[in-house]
Image (cartoon, rainbow, N blue to C red; front, top):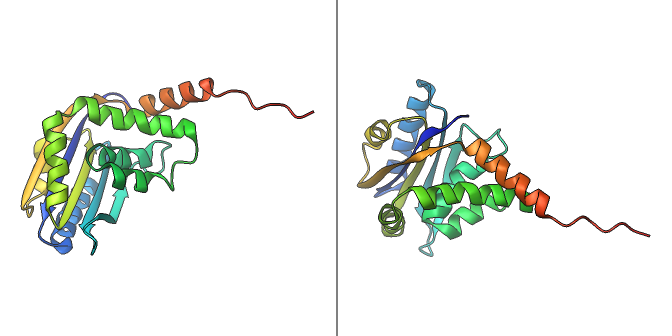
Length: 183
């Protein structure tokens, strides 16, 4: 996958059902497009006020960096939830380095004010939708979030997540000490 524009969107809703309506709209549009990759998650506040992942999907889940696409984006705006999402699917330290490269992309290429506003939206709403779209204009994603109460849709610098993930995992693997030989 060559460098493609990356869109990160966070939208809030009064209910999970409203968030799911836009989730379905995003996935309906994905089936009809030539989008490179898409990942989306519906989040909802639990009884304790903490954000919980309710529903998610990704077109990149079959790729080595696929889980990191959504998890990396969520980590950039809601770290505890993003790490909880990634922990069961990232098996090695080297792959965590790859996740770090994807989180770093969002952290370094999305304006910090947008990231803070996205985080505040997630904390302030009852339900939310997070969307990461690779190779699609921000205006297309914005239009699909039609029932949102509030939303922030931002475009980051182009990324080649496949190459970034591979490079970071290779560097981490090279830095690991060799296992001692048993005698």
